[in-house]
Length: 227
Image (tube, rainbow, N blue to C red; front, side):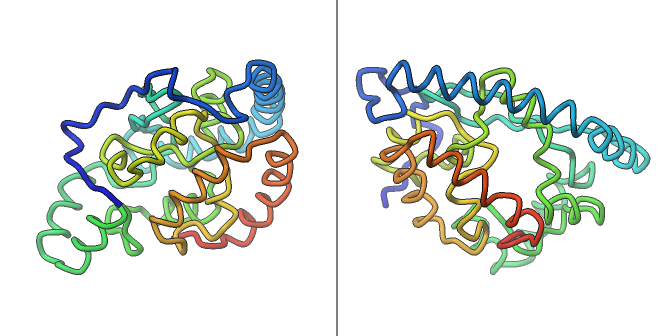
């Protein structure tokens, strides 16, 4: 799969190049309506849990939320919300770790993830294992930057990893859950992750979304593929 310099890669995609079942106007409107209503209900139901997690993180010092720039529909960047799971000096800790550990550096360069990430706090490990760190993304869904179901939101640096499949990725709205999340998450190789996103974009339907949503609670409960 082609890997080019992320600095020279254009994030935006010409709307004329976007195609597939996801781009149909009526279907997209139905998906958006479902997302908004369901996300609003979830925010109301989960409000006590959201407040409790926020209080626990705040007691440890540092900000409660982080905003990572991710690539959304049409290649438009947006601030993806998460509960903070890393130490406040995470950038320095990562740089030192990668400098001193060649194997970790190789893993990072290949997947942009680490199975044993030294930046993650004890509370953060629990939040990641249960995917509770991603609950603030419900507000991204309400804002229309994300969907309940869709491809995993990627960074600019990951665009070259997608190669020709980036067009399919950009035809969708990134999801809080998706085929990658119910297929093993961190146990799935990056190339397979790209293929899962492409498959979702080419075969999207509301029924597929409902099937993925139905399988997500079990994955979260048992932490399948979470690291």
